[in-house]
Picture 1 (cartoon, rainbow, N blue to C red):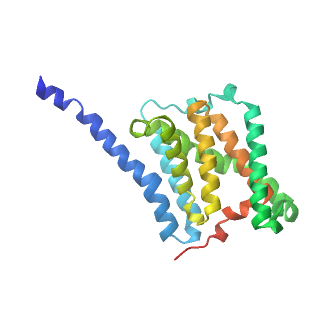
Picture 2: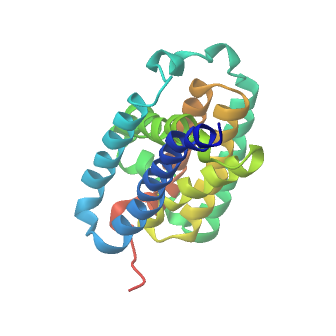
Picture 3: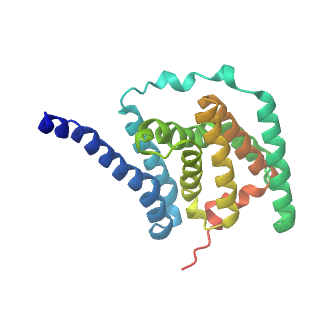
Length: 225
């Protein structure tokens, strides 16, 4: 009896141990390695590779179904989206006017077609893939090893912010942490992946429209080494 009881937890323990290794590699080691060791030209391919890897891992997660991500449209509170959009606009405009006032509406003013391309493509090429990795994968695959409740939301925001370490900018780190909290809340608390994706898309489009997207350009990276 004792021998059988001691053997039972071992598969679960091994899985949790493996999940911790995956988690550390994907959400901690990868962004640090990317930011410290790779040249700017390698960043976009590297990030794309991490997204592909995360998608594969999510697909192989027991119990996960892709159609689950399409659920939750009825839980989108458009008042929340509007309030978030206003708050994002006010904060980003304040930061921009204090630090880079000449960048106000820069892309829209200098290249309206590029601005339209950003508005149209960002939700699908950037916001959606990031939400798959940092919300769906994070909470669905690594849920068994995450801390409870609010601590998990804070951890999610922290790793989301760390993923932007490659920009070496405290403004980017702060904004992505704050945004990560909101997106994690939308996905995990409100139970709506579509809401998280919409909020992320809205935030990104506002940042690039206002002009604070300059802090997110690969070409503005300033390494401290």
